[in-house]
Image (cartoon, rainbow, N blue to C red; front, side, top):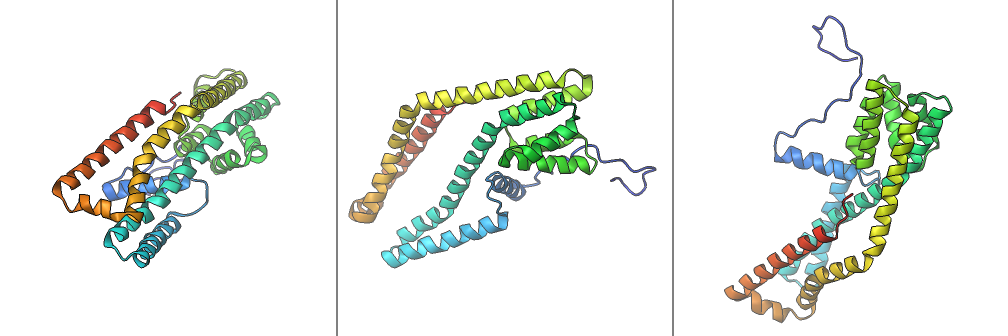
Length: 275
């Protein structure tokens, strides 16, 4: 129960508290970083990730300093030491979301069968949390624990939707909330949601297979200039020094970097799949 002390009667927990809005850039960055760490599925805390980032930010520049003794290499190593863990987190987050997306149809079908067998919605959610596939079952288990503490099922599911950020799961939460408001045959509705989610997964897999060559070509074109630059930087640095010692050369390097970022962003938006 919660509520101010001067209230006449306490209020039972029935809805999930809304996430606290960030008051500044530091709070916004902290919230998004913590959310990113939670969505990787590795079970580490934000403090552990920051410790790993600090370790890589010290080890990589130190190794480059011992290798060449050049301050430019130390700066590059510091950038790589911070960017490498963030890139790894982004890759793990994408993999985690793809795994959950692939498990959604089976979870919806299992919940529909549980309701058809005579279980209530809360019992069906507990069945999915107990007998479902591991990653998604763990998320359902957190929602079931909140329901057992007194939270309404739609509120617990809305908390899961904010944590997962999957469009198909948002559709499922909207269907459950609508059923609790106006009634209807929830079993048939869940079967349709599960079928549509499975069809979208199949369509996405088909598009990824059909565009695999184009995406590999785009990634290769985007990675070729940075790899060539790093190759010259490490093994023939005199070519890079000629650019850095001239104002015109520095302008050329910054122009090349800007065009590279624009081209990479353009290819990303051309090759991404929205459904």
